[in-house]
Length: 284
Image 1 (spheres, one colour):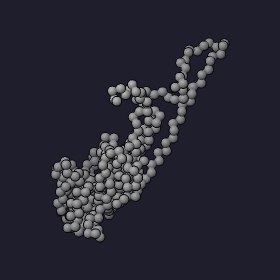
Image 2 (cartoon, one colour):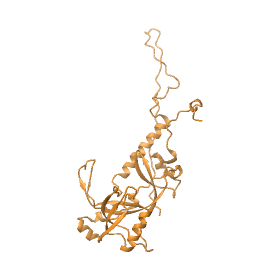
Image 3 (cartoon, one colour):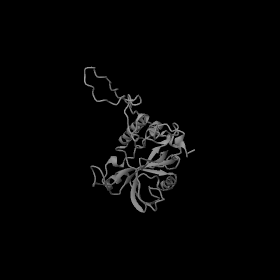
Image 4 (cartoon, one colour):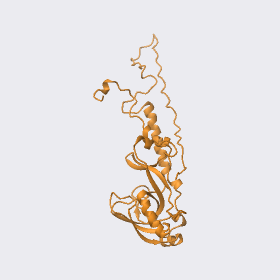
C-alpha cells in the first residue's frame, strides 16, 4: 500500500557572492614609493584562494546543500516515535495497540518498502520512492528495498535516558512503532487469527540470537485487555493507548531530498579538479 505524504525540500540556497576586486593604484610622482605589493594574478582575481582541503565552487555548494538537508532531517525527526528494538538474548513485555483482523480474515497491517543504509556512520531507514518516482537508492544498488509492515505497541520495559536534558530519568510504558519484515508478519498473522486480532494483546517477546529480527522472534501470549482495562492496569492516559498515525510518524522523503542527504546516484564528487592523463598513470 502506498503512503502519500511526499514533502519537497526547499534549501533556499543562493550563489555565493564574489569577493570585491582590490583596486591597484600607482603612487604619484611626488610621493615616496610605497613598498611593492605582489600584483594579483588573473587566476586569483575575483575569487578567494583556498587550500586544497577546503571546499570551493560547486563542491562548497553541494556541502552546503547537504548540511541544510541534514538540518531539515533532524528537525523532521524531532518528536517522532522511536522504533521498538531489543538486544539479542533479551526479553521484553509489549502490548499491541492495533492489528485488527480485516474483512479478508487476515491481519490488517499497513505495509511499505524501505531501504536501510549507513549515513554519517549510523544505520538509518528511508522509505523507498520507486512506486512514485525513480529511487536513487534502488538505481545506485546501494541498498535493496525491503517490504515492511508497521504496528503500534507499548513497550513496558523501564528505559533510562542516557543523554540530553533528561539524562538519568527513567521512562516506562512508552508508545513505539513496531516495524516488522515479511517473516515476522507471517508469525503475527497466525497469532492474530487465533486471538481475534492483536489489539490489546500483551506478549513476552524474546530475541534468541543476533541473527534474529531486532523486534524479537518468539512471542509468549500473556493476556488480552480492553483499552480501559489497559489504562487502569498501567496508569495510562487515553493518548498513551492511541495507535500511531503512521502517515505522520513514517517520514517520506522525495528522490531529491534523498540525494541532498548524499544518498544514491547523485552523491557529490569529492573534487572538481581536472585529472591529467599523467595523473592516471597506473590506473589505466
